Length: 163
Image (cartoon, rainbow, N blue to C red):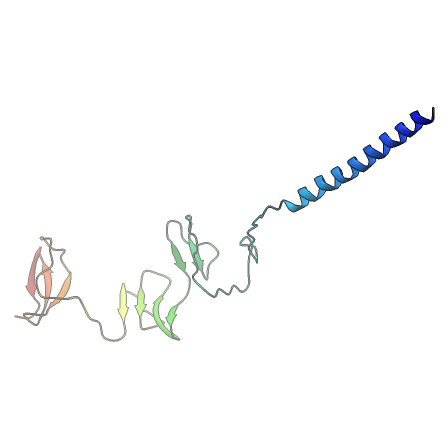
């Protein structure tokens, strides 16, 4: 019986001595294997309403369709950019609308009855030959830099404004 107990203890010790290192080896081998996961986050979340939005680089708006509205919560359907108010560059108004069909350049108040009200000098295209295709669109104008004359399209043909 003593030999049997000895063998049983020895077998238990052998199992204990082999099992514990095997479990530790398996645990450490799992810990030694590492994977890298990349999680992209956006802060602040792009969904929501913001009182102030500051960007410090390129900005893309309505990339996948839709409209961008400035000064309006509902830009007109079918337009990429809807602006309600004046457009200015360096604190100077460059484009304004009177709420109707008049547009002003260089003025905050375009005159009613004019489709385009320009305050300041206007330059038209400078070309050295009559634009094509013919017939031209009546009312179109350009400056001929060879003839040094302003030319306009009248009844489908280019003519000098002043003879």
